Image (cartoon, rainbow, N blue to C red; front, side):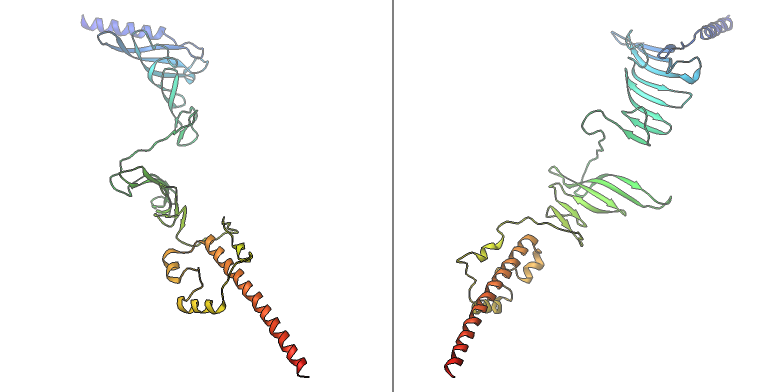
Amino acid sequence: MKNIVLILTFLGSFINCAKAQLGTAKGDAFEISTIGGSTEANMMHHKQWLYRNQAGNNWFSASLHDGIAVDLSFLQPQLNTRTWWERNPYTGEQMWGDMGQTFMVLSGGNLGLGTLTPTSKFEVQTTSTGWPLSLRTNAFNPGDINGIKFYSGYLGEDKWAGIASVAEDLHSNKTALSFYSGQTEKIRLAWNGNVGIGTTTPNEKLSVNGNIRAREIKVEATNWPDYVFEDGYKVGKLEELERYIKANKHLPDMPAAKEVKENGVALGEMNKLLLQKIEELTLYVIELKKENLDQQKQLDQLKKNNR
């Protein structure tokens, strides 16, 4: 008797499935299974539908839609089912979403977030300003990083470049950004906005541990030393300058060699000092020229008197 009941049940299910068909219009759906349970106040269902992606009468245009419903709500695939997963047997495409919104697509091996047509292995799209992608990790020591590596080269060779955030201090918002090439850090954008090339501790807006080559460098400067040629500017006597040089081994107002070795040279300030010394030297030359002319006049007068 039990066998007869089972056979009749199976035949009834088969007949029902045979009679049931998915419509041919885009958006048509047919429920093929449901599993449910109840809470104190609601019924929850795990349902599966056949869903027509585009007009047609065969499996090429249909997908399997797997979603959640509550009571009699959320019963329309691709419109209001909750936390759904859909699979297309023809293209192999898979989609995940919530109600009428698709959040993630796996198509041809490409994973897309916020896009239905990902064209790369991982693509993220957003319709508003903000941070579409966040990578988070804990830092336990200064220097800990959170980054992405980019590999290129032959298989098996560890050749990579990368970008990473760097914890420069664990107890404040001091997070730097570093750029790697050839497996090593090459550029550091420090938390305070200083940029270091070849150094991880830039102390200026741009610190370079190496040579710089450029067609032109423009330095903004103030208090340009045209005041040297103003009336009343005193350059002092050559004798005083000589005594200063003998005592200090450098020109007045100029940094000593030891200071330059320790602190470097500020190009803008040094150019001003050099121009100041050139202009003072010009005044010395003009003064010497006047003295030479006076001496020549005196010699000419002596020659006339001796005739």
